[in-house]
Every structure is written in structure tokens, then in C-alpha cells.
Image 1 (cartoon, rainbow, N blue to C red):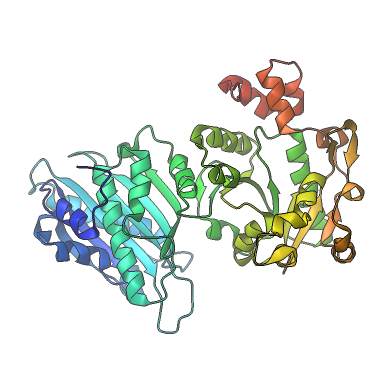
Image 2: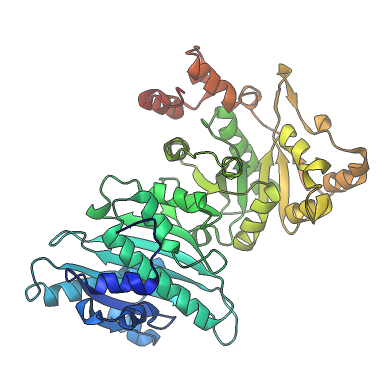
Length: 467
């Protein structure tokens, strides 16, 4: 097949229907049986479809799949139970009667599509459990999506296309990382649907780091952000951050330094003390924005190395394509619905308050700052080393901005929206990641002292950042 040609959903479904080795079942909840419908419409579905079903009634669903502790039916837990139940039933019932060349699969989704009331979030969990070879242990492809179409029928159609793309990719693209991700959005657009989480497991994806697929989502702008927890596992952002106060540090973390760790520690302590916040989540955010805007080749291995280093410190990591703080705030506020504190420094605040950066925008500096400081967002100013004097620390008094912003900046300061952090470690605050990189590349001694020991040990073990 020519992978440069994008096949329609009907063509993909027909190709699968005509493949006598692929056979399985469909279980769909919430948006109609739209994926199974695509296979029936394509023709020849008897060659693929063993069973289709929908368990819309909650009691019926519970009797088949068990009761969810969270009481949430559109959830990863429910999807996993659907995949386990339906694949096992299909395989156990048909393994002895089907040809030995059969590769069994089960497609399942649980979706909250647009309702008559028009209320509620339109999103869903979709998964495929499949055998990549006859008799193989099954593998899984799991997605979480946000549906953006305004009409229920449009959302159903989008789910149908996506489901076909998923099944097709499992059987024809599982060994091609780039094509596996890109083909998921064939015949769709990000104005209709966003994929904000992807995970794979099983022998079909042996040797593949699942996190690379998440990076591909951001690179291809199929989503604005992906998240890894403190163990480096992919997590669904809203499930993880919903109604949580956040302390966020933007940076390259190439590599994460003692200064980065100190900034997060001091920032968290300040938010907990001054705002009386509980269950505060600290996030290290890395943006791909500059690389994407330059059409640069983005090195997945480099990003994953930084994720690995941060998780060595038990830090949670957000990878985004946001260029500015206010774009990031627009994304996080509807999820957090609580206090958000961005840790920044003098040089970054200079950029935030630079009028020239807003000249080509429709909202101007007032709109940009309004989006940043609206609701419950603050900037925590962490001191940094002076580029011209390493022994000097820059604070708010060193911030440079246009004199016409004097009263606006005074308002932000007087109302506690730009706050100086205290209690920081002086030595740590003077460390720049770029300085550490230069020392590593020039084989200069002493760079290890600027990093947490577990980070320095990992950098040396893996020979990271040598070029």
C-alpha cells in the first residue's frame, strides 16, 4: 500500500473487511455504534465483525462490566473493563472454530457526545485490543479525545472515522511510530477532534517507548499538551489536575538544576502558606513552541531524556506547544479551577512586559496580561543570576518595562499578582542550565555540583548532552 495516500474511512474499513485474518467485536457506549457502522457501510463486514453491542443503560452496563468505584462511565477504568470482557469472550468462543491465521481484536469506546441539553464535556475513551500476529498475546492502543463539533451527528461521524483509523493503524502501522500517530487523524481535523492522550502496551509495540507517541501528538498539533506523572507514565491531564492548585515552572530543564528544584520547592511552600492551598501539584513545563515555529527537527530522544531526569526527581512533566505564559494559563485554568502560580525570573518578566511582543496581536498587552492574571493566577518571581555579574541576584527592582506601564505594573504588585519569593537558596538560584550544558560539552569539571546528585549520575551514566 502507498502510505503517502490517505485512504477514506470506507476504503480502510473495506481493506480490513477483505482481510480474512482480521476478526473481532465492537462494544460502543455513548455516541451510537458509529465505528461498527463504518464497517457495515463499506461492505463485506461479515469477514470482520463477529459481534456489535451497546450497553447504554447503566444497570445493564454494570451487570456486564462491573461497577465503577468512581461512578464514572466515561473513564479509562470502564474502557479497560470493556476491552478485557469483550476480547476474552470473542477469543474464547471462536479460537477453536476460526482458521489458525486469525488475528482477533476488540474495539471499544465509552463516549459522552453532545446531548439535547447541550451541557457537559464532550469527550471519550477509545481502545483497540488486538493480536498483531495469529496466536500472539494481545496488545492495546488507548486514546482519550475531546470532541469539538457542535452537533451530535457530527461528533458521531468523527468517532466513527477515528475508530476506523485506530483499527487500521493497529494492523498496518503498529511498527511505524510516525505513521501510527499521523494516520489517527486521517479524514479529520483538529477543529473537530483533539487527541490529548495516547498509550500503547503489548508485544505489537515491543521496543517502542509509548511516550514518543505523546510527543508526536504535540509535534503534530493534534493536542496542545501531554503530561507524564512522577513515574514517567502518560496520564490524562484533566483527570490528574482537576480542581488542583498548581505551581508551574517553565523551562528547558536541559538538564534540571538545583535551581529548578529550589524554585519549585520555594514556590510550593509560598502558595501553601499564603493561600492556604492543599493538594498542590507542582509541574515542570517544557514548550516545543520555538522549535515548531522554526520548523526545526524535534529530537524525541532529547525530550524524553529531560522527562527521565525530571521523573528521577519525582517531578510531574507537562510538554506543550504554548508560546506564552497566558496561553498556558488559558489551558490550565479551566482544568485547575483553582489557584495557579507560575514561577518566573527577571528576564522572563521583562519579556512578559515587553510591549513589542504584543504589537502584531489583536488583543495587545492589556488582553495578554488579562488572560495571564485573570481569575486565580499569580507570578512568583524567583531570583536569578545577573548575566553580567554571577554574584548578583536579580529581582523585581531589576525588571525593565515601558514607562507607560508604570501604573499597570504597580496595580499588579499592589494586588499581589507579582510576588517576590523568599527563603531561596542563594547558590542554587545562580545556576543556569545552559551553563551546565557548556561545561559538559567542554569537559569542564564541577558541573555535577550544579545538579541534584541523581540527575548528575544519570547524565554521566547515559552520556547525555555531549553535543
